[in-house]
Image (cartoon, rainbow, N blue to C red):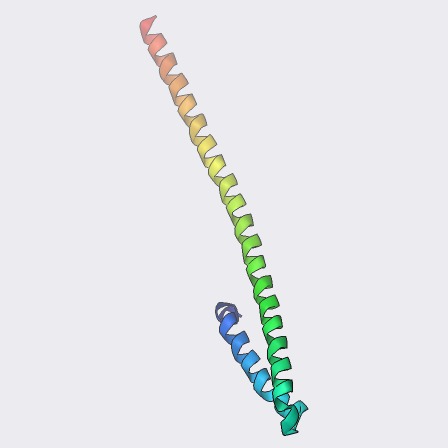
Length: 102
């Protein structure tokens, strides 16, 4: 599955080219219709490729946006935790100083 996802463009292009070559040979054995069937097949393959690529990229954008939202939340938590730690240390330091002065 990882191989397919990593090489989806190449696999779909190879399958599309195979369809463009095989469909006219199977559907229309007459030489006068061969190029018409080939052109229609190529247009359909191009349309299907475009739709599939759009869906894949759309899914990638959605996943990327979710990941960035999660990272922002985690980063905000880390920053807030560090700010709280700094405030506590500053308070303790001030208490220590006031204890020394009194």
